[in-house]
Image (cartoon, each protein chain N blue to C red):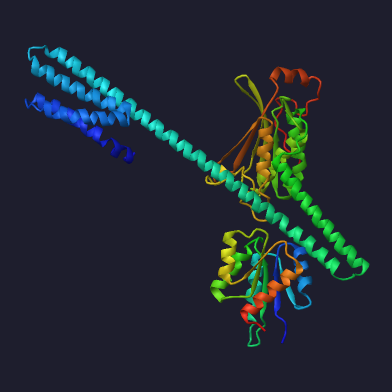
Length: 373
Length: 132
């Protein structure tokens, strides 16, 4: 803004001078000629810098000058007419000036947006760097154990049981590497599974049951609150299971001192579109505001080594995106976090038609059942 | 003259076993630690049991470990107690890691390394410290 002021200070001073000339004229001092000799070149310069701003200053200056000239040349002209012309000129000048300012602010905002976009790109590159470092760290150790063991095998003849032991070690390490690669593939979403027509409540309930025992061991009470609408969504059951269990695992790990983990489903209508909604809320410490923008980035984790790979939430994000859905997180530090997944769904009428052919796991309207303890 | 005590810090058991078996002929005595905290405690213990017949230590430490990273522990130790013969193992030696390892006067050994390379690295840090 200060740079802008410096750039347009000539224009501003010109407008000020024009105003002064008008006021001076009213007090009887005649400096129109002097003002005009300054005004013309300055107006030209301003015009070339910013058309609209120049126009605003020129209008302002011209109005003042015209008023001075008319008033000087024909004093008998009716004062009301002069006032009207003056008021109108001022109005136009101020309007154009405001418009110019608004445009300037908009341009600045646009530039800021471009800068933010650039920053995001840099961050994305950073993510790739983090990814590379993560992969190198994960793969380095098993690779080293394999190469070292192979060397050991080749150095001198060993007893058969020792050879067997070393071969087993190599096998174990390759399994470790395979698991890492599978995780990465999940992350890159290269091996997608075909989508099917799923009952949202039923599919989520299966995943909740899978993790309920693990949660109980950590003294976490899992509450499942299904919508009971038999909403159907188009997704692969394996992926849906992965999404729900990733979000639940995240919630469980966020509550080291125990608590309640709520998993709920709902149907949401937004205009013509219908969404199946899954929400997972924990009672953990919440997510720090500065971490929120990175929460879905690969290898971003605030957990200790061995707790999480930092891939869970980014895998989840990728899957939900593939469905054409959205995932959002809200959190207040100290008050837990809530993840909400919206999956494009079939219209309610279609869902009702289908629900007749299926037994409903939770009859609609019934109180939400709690997972058995 | 007894061989120096080997302090092997890595959170991966197979990796510790590989390092230990590679260096066993020259360093029969080795202690394995699984995280940064334990590494620090073992360094403390080794320094407190000094009684004029101090036994030299050679540290072989991974960087990525639970609790504290190898570099964090070694940095802290370096600041408090002075230089140690250290081999730092890592699979991702970026510029920052290289600079910090150089500051410690340690040797960097990128993964995956050969057994010969490991022996050389240990030999090199011992020579640099003027240890027996």
